[in-house]
Image (cartoon, rainbow, N blue to C red):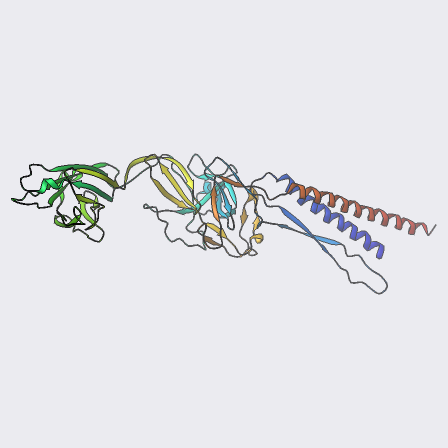
Length: 433
């Protein structure tokens, strides 16, 4: 019985080392595979209850574990949509096959890195057929409150390479100087005119015409102007008329004292703004707060628009797409604007090593991994996203080759034990002769 158990234990040893050799070969074969997580083989002794007067060898068994929680080093690339997770968390992806079925059911798999590029339909996919998923933004670029413990809100990210975008002008700030000499008695200076371009809700160009007419008194100085605002998109209609009064006291001379509305929205002295109803919606114009040197002033004898700033752009064509550290997929247009199209969350589970390994360096949720939760990148326990980067394999070739030598020696030793047991059994058989 003892000799027989020795034979069985050595056979188990051969099988165990063969299993370890398989994981080592897999690790070495994938040493250049981006996102690959090495597999480790553990040995566990098997103990058989011994009877009186003898010992029975139990042998060994193995368990294999993929170390998904290990992270490989990041390497830079030239593709802005090459993504890697720096820290905890994984990217949600789906398969190209699920899109082709077109039943609306896109299973979620997890990956730590991927080289995503737009295909002929605009989907961000890898060469192996994995498609990046995210939460779509609404028209103003904000992300609605999607469920974070379900895949309902996730959709395959699709970029329209021929899309256009523009932003309407909703605010402009004026900083200009009106000539003080035009509001003194006997002044002959006429009105000052200024035209400012803005963009409507459809990205079309329109103009606001601002006319500043001084109030010329019979004696002294009035320090008063009438500002008339006309909108070209409204057929040249007057959308605002305001009386501007400037301070002439020592220390505050030339600053805005008061703004009175005749037509248009009321002046807000706290914000220093007025609202006018241009065609397509209200437009906020910043003219400055009372007593401030920023905004409109009345000094000296020169009309000088010193600064005119505004938001909004004309319609532009898509030029590039990038994913920032917080997972926002941003589209850049040749008009200079950036627009958020999607947000890529990072998926986290309690036991990362409990995930089921799938093809193409992807993983599936299992009962052993626990339920998943989607975090904003850089929030909670998760890390952030790195563009222009890939995660390398976690295989250490030098370490694997060392393990290979050990495995070879252990395999040879077990084979030697089998040979010895065979010789001993042969001696036992020779006793009968």
